[in-house]
Length: 296
Image 1 (cartoon, helix red, strand yellow):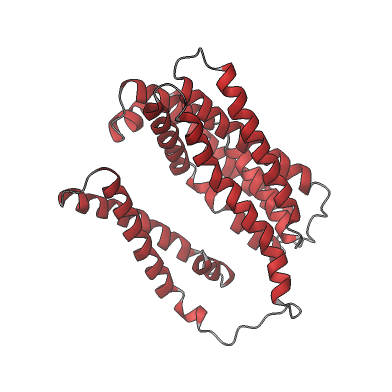
Image 2: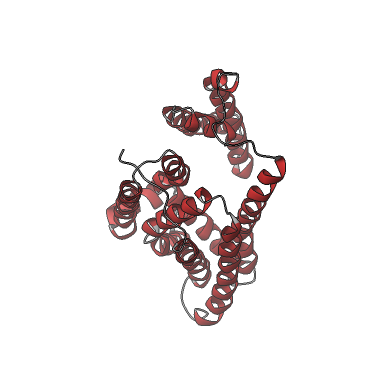
């Protein structure tokens, strides 16, 4: 992430595409290689992911090497101290911990329900497919923050961000509700069958409405970070955690007589939590003065 940040501030965002595409292709090729070498299951997946990540890091390090060693770059801001950075990043570290805890918390809940293997697999695979389809959203926050800090028109940034969100919503809706497409992806590509197929599709459908709200969350968190006061991010994630616990507890009680019980509990926990995270981001950012803007 540090190397990608260097490429952004150096106005070389095309390097992000090079690194990301290289990482994707490398993961696929390494997975094929390890399969031919006799690797199976989690060993194949973890090996391909780990080695591709190392190679991607080395590639982006090579691509930005000139900017790392560029001694002519100077800060135009006032001199800051380590303590200032510490105060800025502590809320971000806390904010990173709670989202990272979400999947283990959901999985821990699902292990106590019927057919935990199917439930956990469905939630993880469904969320993984959703993440792959909504990859366009992943770079929104860093892009938004970079554009805001460089003085671009806030309303144009907002419009473009929501365009990305609704375009991704369109893609997710096609996959979620058009049978030939979801059969091709879930059954043909991922070889899901029977109950696992049905449960995974339920999870994906529960997540499919989220892209505009994910963009909304990244937009308002970008505004908060641009204000140099990251404490609201702590409050957003505390509220997110509370919603997660309430959703899991209520889901266990409400959906216990439904088919695909575990998938509904896990999928609803993820979708409702991420939805309210966007709402909380808007609540805490709405009173922050929008950045001074200039026409791009």
